View 1 (cartoon, rainbow, N blue to C red):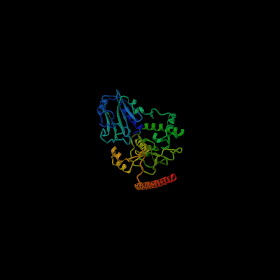
View 2 (view 1 turned 90 degrees about the vertical axis):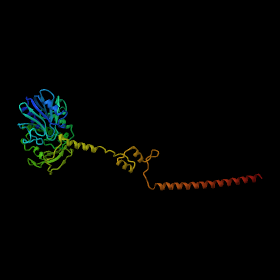
View 3 (view 1 turned 60 degrees about the vertical axis):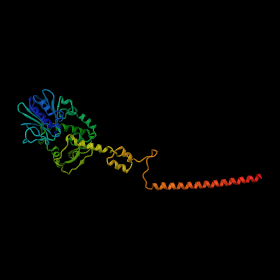
Length: 394
């Protein structure tokens, strides 16, 4: 995506060539994905007749201060770019429009013709940019939610140290230039010396990139930028370059210089010998990393129905067929007795029950026979006793 130096180069070009001039004509693309919260005609009306007073920037966002609000703001996204006809403005590799292409470009989202005939165009090939019309761009998201600007409001070393100590994530996810720090190194485990080195390198890299108007051909040959872009193996000062995935991004690093500190680190996929696809694209604002984190979160969550108890194999078939009506479920539910769970089906169960019934019947017959026999004995005993008494009386 266009980094701070690219956006700063665009800001400087507008400030130098467009400020103090009135907008004579404007054409806004009918693209609701890029032109956010305002219709093309409304944005055109808000620009025409207004004078550009200043071009301002914070982070990777740029906005124009006109002689009266509202003001247009431009969030560059992955491939947003500013072009001024006849003026050399830094061309970011992924957003570059050829000088031989039609003007304004077919990718133009906001076109302005100024009173002196100068023409300005904001383009976006991949439609990740956002153009808004705001009363006060600094007071609302996304600009209001940004931290200090790395160029205009650099962090003090103590602020950086304290911020890193609170983050248990890979340094790559926080910063794209690791300053001889392994991209998978846990931020909170960085030493004071590493933090100071990182702080110094951030300032040096940003200031140098801004000084050369983000012209990548002017970047020092030892910067990994040159190798990372083509994702091709190589060496820096004789030291081998490897590639891993960190924070959802293809990351180039030099193992001899960027070493992990301590035991724990964020895991990353390494493939030092592969040649990555030159056409491979990374998603806007690290969205690929966010998708990976979401996938991990989904895997951590219990699967629906994992702990559900199904009454029978037949019930599973009913659910699979999509018949989830209460009536169908009730028919398939096994009946319970006295609140107890039904016993599992057993093919031998009917025979056992039959055997038990026959045994009970046999026992019942025996009991009746014994009772009858006992009754006979008692009646015989009683008769003998009666006859004995009669003899005594005589």
